[in-house]
Amino acid sequence: MHTHLKHSARQALIAAVLVVLLGVSTFFAFEPQVGRSQVNEVFTVTQQITDEISFTVAPADVTMVGTIAGLTGGSATGTTYAVVRSNDAGGYNMTLAFSSSTAMGQNGGAGYINNYTPTDPDEPDFLWADNSTGQAAEFGYSVTASTSTDVDPTFLNDSAACSAGSSSTLHRCWMSPSTTPEMIINRATPTGGSTTTLTFRVHVPNSPSPALPSGFYTATGTLTATNNP
Image (tube, rainbow, N blue to C red; front, side, top):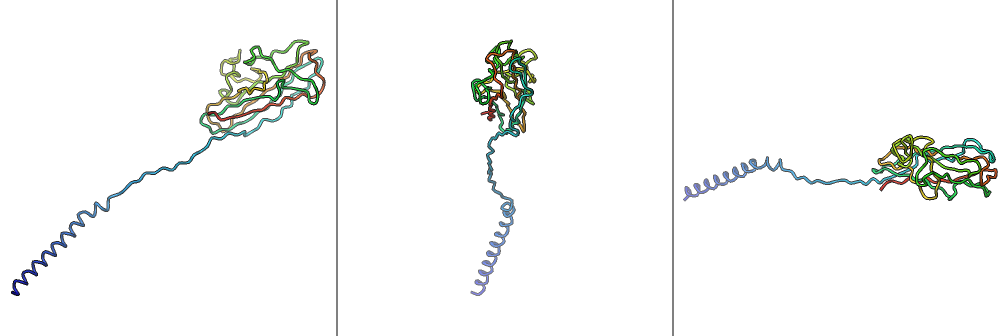
């Protein structure tokens, strides 16, 4: 009886030891795989940057260089410039408009200086054409830029005509002032600072008609810079 119990106990002990050994060996067999397993989750971080445009240098008021005699006539010029920066991928455009249909009028008086009249009203004249004796005094402008390709093609020239070629030249391509905004710059890329120069000219012929009372004459222009869509 005791011999049978001892035998059964020994068999049970052996079985228990085998179960423990099997469990331990199974753990060590699979533990490295558990230790090397991983889970990946991908995510993104998004920040919107808006487009922006500003005048780094705003156009200054212009005082024409020299006076002009009201009866015998003469010419005078003056310049101003503006610097624009834009981070827009499509660049920016700039227009010029004047506050009055006859841009230059006498301060506090009835006198006025006619707008310059190009041969083609829709395109600048390559060279300024002075009116003859007895004709009207005229006021007009031209446009150049630090980067010629920024200038609207109507103000570019090929050394003989405007709306042609790729040159942006001082005292070339004279245009008539208008209350309708005229495109003068159209840049296709961002810029940290592009310079646009405006040159103005007044010519008074001998014995101008209409007559010009003495005094100061002023034209008010507005430059508008807009990021391209």
